[in-house]
Image (cartoon, rainbow, N blue to C red):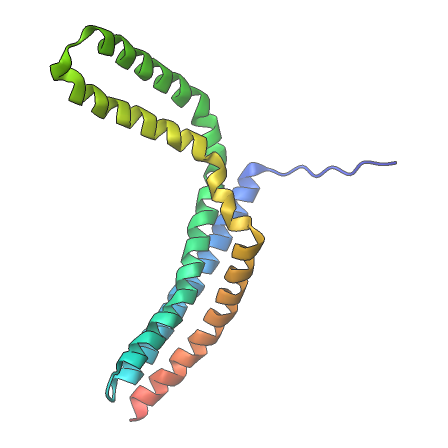
Length: 170
């Protein structure tokens, strides 16, 4: 049985993700412009609460696309974060060791500053642990939601052009 392997260059993958992010962000911003034109057309008459609700619902699709683009941007930054991981882990361990040493030797008055420094060290440790979080964008429900948001955003662009024509004509 022959085994097929695929060599993936991380830089090529990073460039591909960056181009996808740019395309998704452009679609989201084009849809937002379309929504603004639709809102302007609705505001021509009496802008009611129902019109406001419709505009807020329309804004959901580009928002989902922007969240997807942000998640892809984080995935593209993962190799860089993985390279920094050993150095940051060593730095955080040294900082926690210093804090433990100071906690044994200092008095009660320095406790608030030690707790503040401990908060910073623990927060940066949490950042190291969160390496898998960007992969949430690849869960099936979010991918399906992104697909439908993209399809709806594609429809919002011509709808915005129609609203522009309506605004120009009347």
